[in-house]
Amino acid sequence: MAAIAATVLAACGSSETESEEKGETWREIQEEGEIVVATPGTLYPASYYPEDSDELTGYDVEVMREVGERLDLEIVFEEMDFDSMFASLTSGRVDVAPAGMREEIKDKYSYSEPYKYSYATMIVREEDVESYDSLEDLEGKVAGGAATTVYSDIAEKFGAELKTYGNVTNDVYLRDVDVGRTDVIINDYYLQRLALESLPQLDVTMHPDLKFHTNNQRAVIEEGAHTFRDKIDGALDEMRKDGTLTELSKEFFGGEDVSEKPEEDIREIEGIE
Image 1: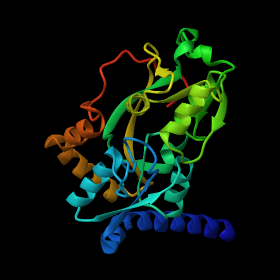
Image 2 (image 1 turned 180 degrees about the vertical axis):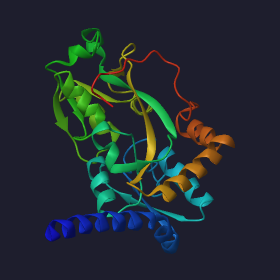
Image 3 (image 1 turned 60 degrees about the horizontal axis):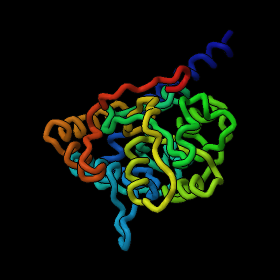
Image 4 (image 1 turned 60 degrees about the vertical axis):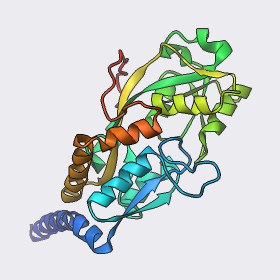
C-alpha cells in the first residue's frame, strides 16, 4: 500500500508541477522578450514572400506582428510545413502555431479566439466542374494536400486518394490539377480564390456551388498556458474593436473581411471538426 500511495502522490505531484510550469509560460515569454511563431512562408496570402522581396508578410503574419506590438514583444517567425507545426509546439521550439481547432487534438493545446473565419471549397479542372454535384463525387479521385490537414481528412472521408506535399507554394498544387497529376484541391475558400486570381493561365476553377465545413483560424499554444492565451485574446479583442483585423483582412483578402463569420449556406460534415 505504501508503494501504491507513493506512486499516487508522485503522480499528483507531477501533475501539479506540470500545471505550475505551464503557468510560467507567459512569464518566460516576457523574460525572453519574444514570441516564436510557426509559419509556412509559402501560403499566399496568409504567410508568403512577395515577388522580389525577402520580407515575410501575409494576413497571419501581420496579425501576429500586431499582437506582439500590443504585448510589447518581438515576433520571431520559424518557417516550416504545416505537418511540423504541432510537433514544434509540443517540443517547445515555437510558442504559437496559427491553425484551426481539430477534434482529435483540441484537448492537447489551448486556443485563442478566432481571428479569421472561412469555409472549404474545391478547385477542379474547368472541363470537370459538372462531374462534381456533391462531395460524394470525390470517390476515386486524386486530391492534393498536406498530410494532416482537415481538408485531407475530408477528401479521404469521401473516398479520394490523397497525394501529399511538403511545404510548397500554392502554384504547385494548382499546376498538378491543371496537368492531371491530381483531380481536386480541397482548401480554404479565401486562400483558393486569391491563388486562382494569381494564376489565370491555368485551366482550373473553383466549384461554384460546393461550400462546406466552416472553419476558423486561431493562435494555438501550449495546453494549459491560460495567462498567455488571455494576453493574446486581449490583443485580438482590441484589434477587432478598433478595426485593425478588418483593415488587415481587406488588405490581404481582396477587400473581404475574414474577421467576421461568413453568411453562406454551408454544408457541415459529420465526423469532421
